[in-house]
Length: 561
Image (cartoon, rainbow, N blue to C red; front, side, top):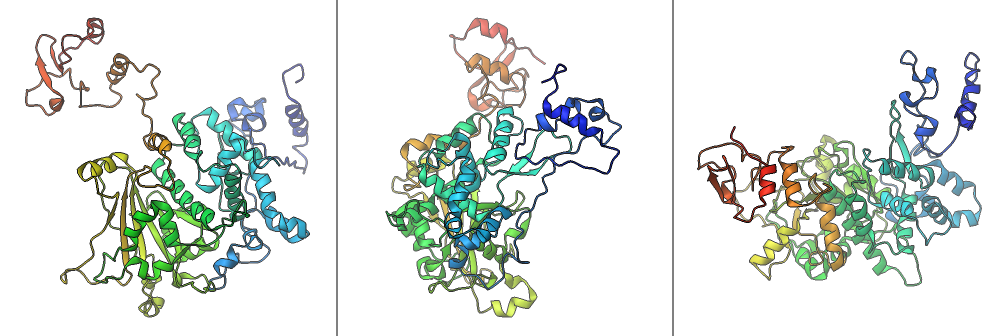
């Protein structure tokens, strides 16, 4: 600081301003994204020129840097790559930042052999890979399952900036007002592999719910749709469980970028006993009685280490499915997508491990995520969604000989649905199979057999391999976002009632927000909560009995309107 309170950086900027009339420009290179220090909003700028509305103001930091820029024209080619090809480090480095493929290509054997270790160090922000900081843990989860921060919270914005500065998070955009940034972890398979291995090295699998619970409880993670966040986490944990089961004890950490069988994945997801029910499922859109385990899905393969967010319907196509397999990623559908929330691509007919990835040999798991008190089936028809290329005129003839089965899973994460189901029938499993089509009067048979599974609950009973008994409350808290009342500083009933009386949202149950209206005794408002016509108090109110606090009653005085 000088005598006027200016930093060295601000003084340097003032000096550089003297060169404005000349054909010169200056570039500052930094991963530090503290906009408040280097490029603050117009109103906080330290000079009159920077604050003036008559000028264009200061440029937002330039972040349009190269991504997916490989040395060759195309990153992928249809019907050319096998799953074995795309899972090798020398293939994965071509995606994402040029940092990885340039280092791999021009490095010696030692550099190439340690490319994943290099990615781990960059992501962890330290060479001590088994001692991840809290920011490092968030970075790893951000890469694997995707995390969006609440831009309204200062701590969340600060953490986001720290992840950009030292944990490989990418600035996607800096708005013109420069009050915050948009950032994330785009698809980089080599970084996702590094993140998966860091999770193993730090024994994070059992601690993830606590990490997410802490951030969600403090409203630092964007509320968005947390049910999808939990679903992505459970699906990712099921994938990793299979990798751990198949890997050698001497291989620590194992390689996570590897194809796994759908049958192994389903066993890891819901346990061996419940998985057997799924294996016996038959299509529900045709009279075909082929069990899932005996269909092409019985030997189908998955390959994903991270999730990519779709911007439109393009992810719901078999073309996007094979591209997802080639990049080791699954799809998070865009927010307005009809019927489907997540898609896990599947490769069919790869028994000899030499099938080339293309649109004609892929299918998928279509996930529909719910969090409702009652399980509701919303039909997912991949043909109506135009997932299969048979919808295109030039492939219709070829597709007639290529029926591809697919799996839809309706996942209702509401724990009350599971409890009610088990209360009604103690022997009832939390998995339901759709009824196969048997009536000849039904519409024409679908060319692509659909196996539909409905899973209800979010507990150890439903996911025995993935959720420990002590974690159930954490998952429940993440799924049930805290409301205004939950976050109120004073949780006494009188204080909560006083907040409700502010009528920020009109409530009809209990005392509700309609108690100051004198109405007919048959009114449906408050009628289910034992409401009486209280003429002495001048309103309808909840019958609280003779022990009501008189002081509170006077404070919350009611009147007719």
